[in-house]
Each structure stands twice: as C-alpha cells, then as structure tokens.
Image 1 (cartoon, rainbow, N blue to C red):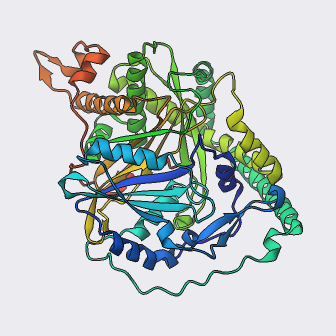
Image 2: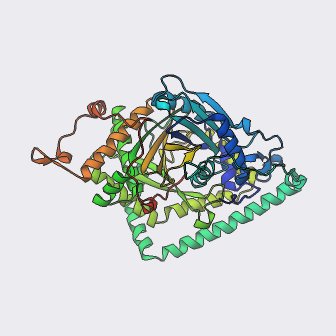
Image 3: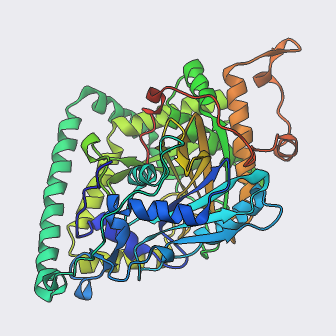
Length: 519
C-alpha cells in the first residue's frame, strides 16, 4: 500500500473536530478488535513501528496558528516515541465480554493528548478462551471512517504469514517552517481557506441546481413537502437526549451479513435501511421501557455520508456530509417499519438533502478560521430549545475477508463513534468478514443501561429476520401472533453473541455496495 496523500494544513472540517472537543465530548473514532489468540506485545510494537513510514501522519502532531488566524498544521513530532502510543493492559477476571466492554469504555472516555500524534493502541491481555484484543483510537481530525479502515489495512495483514517487522527507513523529523506559524502566513492561510470554501460552495450550489432539473429530484421534492410535518414534529428530546458528562459506556453485538442480505432480497430496502430499521425499533422499545410513548413520534437520525471518490480512498482527513432523516417510532411490524424507513431515506437522498448539509458546511467554512473556532467552541455550551438531532447512526464497509496481526486472525471488530453534547447514545456499524458489527457508544450518566439498548437491537434484528421469512405456526405466521409486553420480550430474548463467537456467512464483495454512510 502506498503512503497516504497528506495535506500539511488541516481543512475546516478537520479543524472543527479539534474546536468542538472537550472532556464531555472526546472526538476520536475507534475500534475494539478481537483475535483468536493473544497478541505478543513486544513483537506487535516492533511490527507497527516498522510500518509507520507508510502512514507518516502517525508521526505528526497538531500545531495551532497564532490566535487561530489560520487552520492548524500537521508537523513532524521531534520527540516521537512509539512507546507513548502503544500500551499493554490486562482486563479484569474472568476476562469475558462484560469485562472487556468495561475496559474499552474507560479507554474510549479519555480525551487524546494533543502533545503527541493523535492515535494510540491498547493491547489487551487476560481474555478468556485465550483470545487477544486491541483498542485502536484515531482522532477524528486525522481521519473519517473510510480513511480509518484504510489505516487498519496498513496496521493489519491480509494473510496469516504477513505480520512481520519490516526494514524501515530512518525517521528524521522535518523542522517546522517558520513561515507556517508566522502572523503573515496565518492571515494568508485564512484568506486562502475562505476563498476555497466560497469556490466549494459555488460548486455545491451548481450541482444542486443541476439536480433540480432532474425528474427524480423534482418528484422527491414533491414527496419531501408531504414529509415536512413529521420532520418538524421530530424535533423533540427523548430520554437519552440530555447533557453528557464524558463518562462512557461501550457495548456491542453482531449479526451475520448473509441474514441481513436475505432480508433485503425478501422484502426490499438497502442494507443501510435494514440497519436503520433495527436501530429505530430498538430505540422505540427502549423508550417504552422508560415509560415514554412512541405513537406519532419520530426519531431524528443523522447518517454520515462519504463524498470520497475512488481515487481518494487512501487520503486522510474528513470527506463527509450528513443525511438527515426522521423515522417513525410507532410502527411495531418490522416489515412495515422497513418499508417506512426505505421510503424516507430514498426521498431524502433523491431530494439531495445531503447536498444542502454540505452547502451549510461550506458556508460555515467560508468564515475566517478565528470565527469558526469561536463558533464550534461555543456550540457545546448552548442549550437549544429543540434538538437538531436525536442520534447518529453510521456504517462503514470493512474488509470482506479476514485480517491478521502476527498471524492471529481478527474474529471481530466493533466500531466506536463519538458522542456528546445532548446525544446520550450513538451507533456505529461495520461490515467485516461476513458479519455486521454494531457498536453503541453511550454517556454513562445519561444512558447507564446501554446494554439494554444493545439487547433490544439484537431482538429487533431477530424479529425482522423472522418476519422476512415467516413460518407457519398454529395456522398463522409468527408476525401475526400477539406480541408480549416489551419487558417480557427482553427477559426472554436470547443473549447477544459473546467474544467467543466465530465469523461465518461470508458474502460477496458487492454486498457492501449499499454501505454508503461513514463516520
């Protein structure tokens, strides 16, 4: 793999993740990766160290410009030491899923130290069944989900025999050019970045104007008008939309990708629609368990969408926009829910809603960097009368085949998406080696029972799978049977897979094509 294409100065989107971050909102993407055998720590460090020349950003730190007049720059760390980035940690006994989730939650709740390059890896020992694990964190200013997956392909290997330390070139840090941090350069950078954003805004406007001439877009806009009442009605807080404290709970579950594909083939929708359906039904049941009604209420979900071209797959930084969608919570039948979700996401896509969000982003980016730093730094301190969104749900296409570290096979990879402000819980999904891996990131004080939402998601997927392939039981299908109360269903629902589970149900690479949303 060639070294990623690097820009020395951060973009406006990259810098925004730095401006927004505080202890209540740690802004890193991450993954908890589980292997079929323990990871030898010393050999793992040597192997990663030998590959860092392929990802030079991992040896660079963020340097601010004077008075935030320009965007920060990436500069080589003159004191780089890989021992400040890879740590060995032992999980508490008995080393099961609950103990690993608790350890991962503590790691993910920490804000990254900006005095060194913005990444780290914790190698976990003490897991039962002899398994190994790593927790990989990368700051969102450095990479989005697609770029993060590309980085994982550098750190890991496609074959069991590939994980060996390689000869590496000697690292000699380049001194930061004085002009990069002068007042004149900062002002010039501010003017240049504003002009770039104005040009980008014009390009987005032109693209949107062309789209308006398309019959599909016109039809979608007419349907969008009919959705406006529910889009407005969805602006309300739920039990998990409260100010966050920064303490984290991270938990996960997983499903065979083949089963999701079978649902798609049986009753329609995209893979993204199936994920949104399962998450929305789980949220609906979670809200009811907390004594809140769901009839006539809508969940405002935002799905990050990649705008990265095929020739930009190896570039770092963030190249994303966001697709907002309001999803009904009061539909109990999983098939009807999937159809409702598919209809709404299709309308929002065809109406170019993501383009409008991109236009807003470029409009903000046209402001001078000092104003942007002030704007993004102030946002978390403002309590709006109505929330702009209730939950972020992102999914990323991972490797369709197994990856390895020092010959150890990665059997699971649970993605983490940041949360904070008034988003008490967010969900990330990643496909890998024939499975869909769900990771739920929650604020421990706002959503202390995040495991319940995880279990409800597992239950909702089972209901959708059975509804897509109904079986006859006592002269009627299972979907027509009277449902038990939510608390009773939760008590009877099967436990989600543990870390001992093995990947199965491999799918063809084209099954990942629908996974357009990234973090």
